[in-house]
Each structure stands twice: as C-alpha cells, then as structure tokens.
View 1 (cartoon, rainbow, N blue to C red):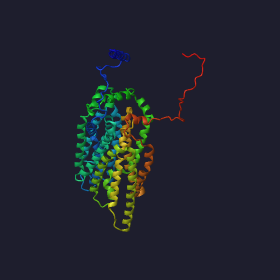
View 2 (view 1 turned 120 degrees about the horizontal axis):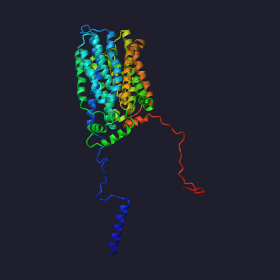
View 3 (view 1 turned 120 degrees about the vertical axis):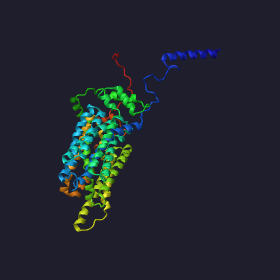
View 4 (view 1 turned 135 degrees about the vertical axis):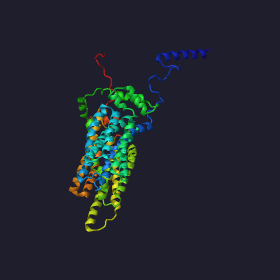
Length: 520
C-alpha cells in the first residue's frame, strides 16, 4: 500500500513538473511545420547541374571556332587558287578583327547580363554568331569576311561572362569549379573541331559548319531555367527562384535554406542605381579581384598560349619540326581538349593556385627549350648542316600546350564567375572578360613586332621568361576559392583591420570590497 501511494505521488509530481516546464507530451510532434525535415539533403543532383551547365556553355564552342579558324583558313586563302585571294596584311586583319568584336561583345554582355537576365542574354548572343559564320562562308570579297569575323567575335565576347556567371549561380560549391570550367572545355572542343575539320575541308565549308554550333546552343538555352540569384537580386521573385532551384537540384534537396540565404544576401540590393554600382566598384571586394584577374590575363597571354592557337601552322613550321604541319595542329587540338578536362579534375582536388604554378614552370621551361632549339636550327642552316633531333621542338610545343592549358587557360576564366560581388557580378564579369580578350589582342599585335625586334627564337624566350617570373604574382596575389561559397569569396577581399596587440580578458574574480554606492 505504501509503495503504491509513493508511485502515485511520484507520477503526480512528474506531471506537475512537465506542465511547469512546458515539456511536450508523447503525442506532440517534435518538429513543427515550416522547419526543414531532417531527411532533406543539402547537395542536389549532380547530373541535373551538369546538364544545365552543358546547355549554358555549349555556345562557348564558338569561342574555340573563332580562335582556331585562322590557323587553318589563312594558308588556304593565301594560296593562288583561292576563291578570294588575300595578302599578308589582309590576313593579319582577318585574324585580329574578331578580337575587336570580342571586346565590344564583352562590354555589351556586362550590361545585358544584369538588365535582361542570364538566360535571355545567352539566347540573344547566339544570333550574331550564326549570321557571322554564314557571311564568312558565302563571302565574295574580303570585306565580307571582315564583317563576318567581327560578328562571330562579338558573339564570342558576349558569351564569356554570362555563361560563367550563370553556371556559378546555379551550381553548388562542391561542383562549381568544375562546372564553371565547362566554358574552357567548350573553347578547347571548338579549337579541336576547327583544326580537325579545317585540315580536310575548304575555308568556306568550314564556316558553314561553324554556324551549326551556335544554332544548337540557341536551342539548348531555351530549356534551362533562369538564374535563381538573378531572380532574387533583380526581380525579387521568391517563387520563381525556388522553382528554378528545384529544376537544377533535386526533389529531396533543401532548396528553402538556399532561397533564404539568397534573400538575406540580396535584402539590400533592390533597385540598385548607377551611382550605387560605382560605389560598389570602389569597394575592395570589387576592384581587388578585378585587378588580379586583369593582370592574370595579361601574364597568361604573354606565355604565348593564343599565339600558338591563332598561328599554329606557322609556329610549327618555324619550330624546325619535320612533322606534318596540319597533323601536328590536330594533335595540339587534342592535347588542349584532353588537358582541359584533366585541368578541371585537378582543380577540383588541388585548387587554382597549384595549377597556376604548374603552368608557370611548365610553360617557362618548355618555351626556353623551344627557343634554344630554334637558335640552334638557325645556326645549322647557316652552316649548311642538316637539323638533328627534329622531334624535340614539337615535343616542346606539346608540353607547353599541355602545361598552359591546365592553368593559364582555365583559372582566370573560372575566377570571373566566382570572385566578383553578387550585385555587380554581371557588370564586372563582362569588363573582366573584355580585359582578357583585349590581352589576347595585345599579344597578337605585338607578336610580329617581337619577331622583328628579337627574332623568332627570341620571341619564345621572352614568353618563357614571363611565364617563370609570373609565379611571384600568383604566389602573393592569386586567391584560392576551392570549397568556398560565393559569399565567403566576396568577404575575403574586404579590408580587415588587424589589432595591434591581443586583448587579454582577466577571468580571475577580484576580491570583494565593501562599497558605499547604492546599486540599482
């Protein structure tokens, strides 16, 4: 009897204690409505993100087509039996006029990417490429080729920024570096296609084939969703943002948390004026990455990467190699594509700075070796002696192309989609892309000048020296964005005030002393 009474009293006290502390009963739900369920995943479908990134970056194949076209078409146009005969001066304009269009395209892209949105910009920029290649293929005068090359360059300049910005905004941090690098892979695929098909077809047939690539890209872009970041920052459309994320994630993925993060980050971005954009550009988080990316472009281009790309047949012939020029060009295209993919995988595991170091050392040593052989080849010709080890210069070129591809070709273009502030990412992305293509223009224009000044072997020695010295800049200034969110990358460029001396907090209690003051 006593035991039963004690149990009854214990139950009564327990019930009163539960009521007092407001503890939930067994029948109450432990999770309230509106909170994410524990079964929700934080990582979305990798396949969906890859397919969306491929669709958005298909148009970047056109960049490779523009780069590689002159390498195989100019020797055909300069032959006596060509339908349109050109001289050396006209050939240089055909090669460089596309870079003028590319610069204009970068400026337009910086404006339209934020105004129209990422998707509509990707749609609009495919049209000049289709028209431009058709003009080149059906040209009856060299002036039509100029105009067509300008239009395809305009399109290639416009796609660089929005494709990378869009990809970075729809992909998650663990996939972002690889997916943003799809643009560089597309460029390498375009160069390979141009070298391969150009070696077996005429320049006008090649131009018609090139028109099909942006046409396919135009169809693919219609099926991708708009960027969720742009829908929040420019349209403040939470419903469409959530729907966009669900299309590129997974039904089991927690998109609500991602939407909330975007809302928090863009809460102060509504109706941003031109004056406010200028103010944001003057912030360290904007001008610091822009300066770093621009210098990276200039240094990487003076490694000679696009000199070899634009003048592949001529460079191989001048190197002293006895390998068939067009066959060696096709091999260069294969190396570029393969090592672009390898570079993407290496970037996922190593990050961006190690790849930059690989390019600096590899390009510097291989170009010095190529330059040394070219000097010796000139001496052999002057002495009337046959050249030996003719495999050495082409192997040096292959090594140079592989090393430059894994770092110089990938890293600065990936940085465009990552390092700029969200509010002006489209603007600065377009301007940075413009800076990159302007660097290509400078290198292509100074290439003949360097050859006349320091000779052909000396030109490649200069490129090799710049590559090796560049490692100092990359060590001190190149940021590492591996496994960081876009917000973390942006915050890393802000000036941080360092304390002169550490603040020591004394946790030892002071002895009590009587006080005559009245405390309230």
